[in-house]
Length: 251
Image 1 (tube, one colour):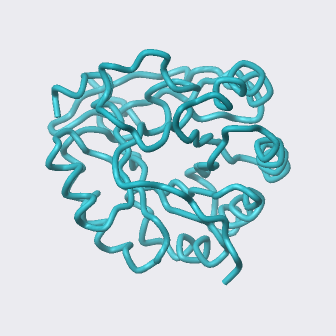
Image 2 (cartoon, rainbow, N blue to C red; image 1 turned 120 degrees about the vertical axis):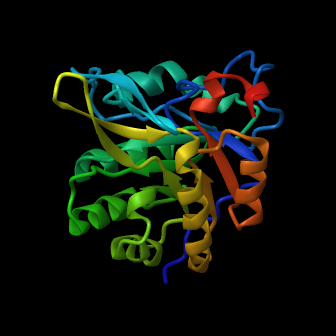
Image 3 (spheres, rainbow, N blue to C red; image 1 turned 90 degrees about the vertical axis):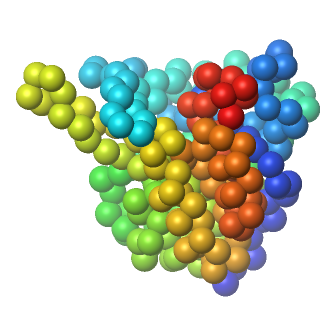
C-alpha cells in the first residue's frame, strides 16, 4: 500500500459541501460551536450553470434536492477565495468535481501551491464506470490528503476498496441519489436529504470501519444524538448538511 498524506482531524462536526459557501462565514455565531474543518462548495474546472430543472421536493422522511452544483469555475473561485482560505481560523477542505482526468490533475496541482488548503475532497461522476472512477482518484492523489466522497448507496462497491489501496486519506459518506414522481406524471431526480436516511448512514459507518482510514460520516443528521451515535460507531467526524439552514437549535 502506498504512503498517503495524513489527514489531521479531530472528532466533531463540519459542514457538508454545498451548504456554507466557498469560504468560512465571517460571522457564524448561529452555527454549532467548534467545527473541526470547513468544506467549500463543489468546484468544477470550468464555470457551471445551475441545473435547468433544479428544485427541492419533499417526501416522507426527507426531500430530494437538485441544483447542478453551479459555480464560477476553478480559476475564478481561487482568485476570489484563496486569500480567505489562507487566513481561515480552521482547516479548509476544497471540494472538487472530478469529471476529466487532465482537469483534476491541474486543479490538484494548483491547490498544492495555495496556503490554507488542508485537504482535497472529490466527488466522482455518478454515471462513470469503475475504471474511470479509479483513474480520477489516481489523478487527484498528491501532496495533500485526498478525501473521497462516496454516496451511501455505493459504499460497498469494489472500486471503493481499490481507491483505499491506491492511497486516499479518508472516505466521506455523501448523499445518495434518488427519484420520486412529480405531480405531472414525470420524475424528480436528485440527492436525498433528511432524517429518513440516517439509519442507512449509521449502518454504512459500521460496515466500513475495516478500511483503517478516517471515515467522515453524514447524511440524515438532524439531532444531536445522531451526531453522537455516528462518532460512537467509529466515524472520525460528521458532516452536517441541510440542518445548517435551519439552525443548531433544531438539533
